[in-house]
Length: 638
Image 1 (tube, one colour):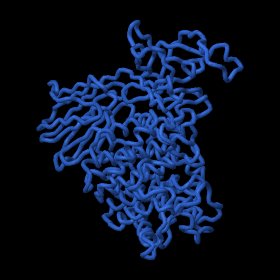
Image 2: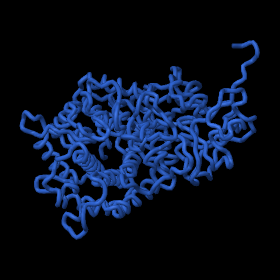
Image 3: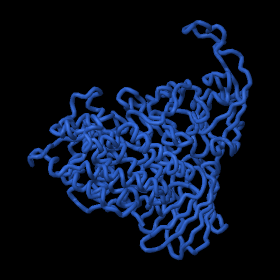
Image 4: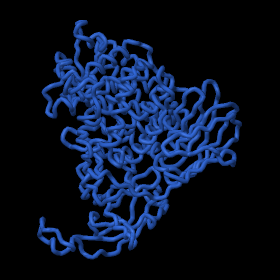
């Protein structure tokens, strides 16, 4: 069986890690539908875009100059590498002659593009051959190398072929010769866009070559020395303002910061330096308390694609790049491996459903680069982008997703995701089969049947959103232990085939308010149910300005399963109101305060759909944060 997509469980300082994607078969439900769409629609569509936008011709032109100059962004090679990573995991789980043929073809182009010294980068080929390493700050040379290394590791683990891995090793050997401390006569530079760090660690795990790990450590230690001066957005944009161990919070470009932290976490899992983990914990806690959108999205500024200040979380101008959501998931995976703390699994799931999946259309062929939490209807998904980092990033994340249903370590199995599935796991030589039956995330009832004969610990995640009422039984007998939201409950026993656990997670709709310093959300609430964030669309409220919608009392919100809607969704219905500004505001922007700020409300029926499903029926306005009806306080009470 292939190894995990990210080999975390076997690391010296890890307690657990994801299982191989091939160990888990999604058998039904939302995640299987998304996986199938990725394999059957998205990857083929993306391959056509790689042809159309010149990514593949950039490789071909090295031997066919008649194809003309380099096309697209300086980092266009990386989109090919991410596609290879995604396709590798798909063909490992489901035979696809078409994807396999394209994989072989793409890898052949990369092999032919590699120079005698191991160098691969089509932007710095031919007419720019003498300019290597001349602009590490802006031109993504090492970033592209990192995606090549990740693709090579995935392809080797998924197929057993060493073709692309050999290309990666030759290139990595060149990097080890070129980069390092200036005192050793090497280039001390770092890349402006992090990724090489985590990619080198994973290449070390696959090959055992310690020099790759050492180079990753060099790049981590060298960042923060203020060597990337002169960019448009300042030194913080590159996380080069302070050495990592002196940082207290994430700043600058969101994706870069998240990829870097994931790389540092990877290095910690090998090196074990306690200060690295402590700094990562500090930065994660600060992010969760100050920088995280209710969707799990990260990055509040279009300027510099940046994280912004604490509590700076605008809705319509939210950037929340899809790649940032994926970077957060990558970081959470590694922090979960390092600590076993369920808060990282909770955010991984929340980000998956509410920050990554919104970036991808229901039909599999369209993508958001940015994911606002309010919109006037002009923001629509695109088939591809000039900067097309997000589409193949979604593809590779979804392709490997089955491996994150479970994390294992020793004789422990952590249930990370609840999803209709069948798994065969190896726990230190004990073969364990697990079958999940559930309609999650639409329903909180989960049955897990065990096929094994031996003792191990099954760790069931009690999601943080499940504030009370969770119930667990084993073979029909109630579990006597406490079920604490935001933790794993450990069920340890000698299991026999046919043993069944049943976990029941109540999914009553909930309202969330934001911190008072998030001024844009004053007097507004977000509507959630289970792990899902909801929104309202103009499609369901014709003729209504969504900013005037007022949500009724929480107890009036009723879920309804609609199997015909976008493949099947639970929508939320509620009595509500439309409360527009009073007539005195007509043609007036500023007036002295008065009692009649709003017109008399009119009754309205409110319908909310999962946020990930918006903009799939037709373009139109959308809102996540809604006005809430004032609650009457009984006479005589404060």
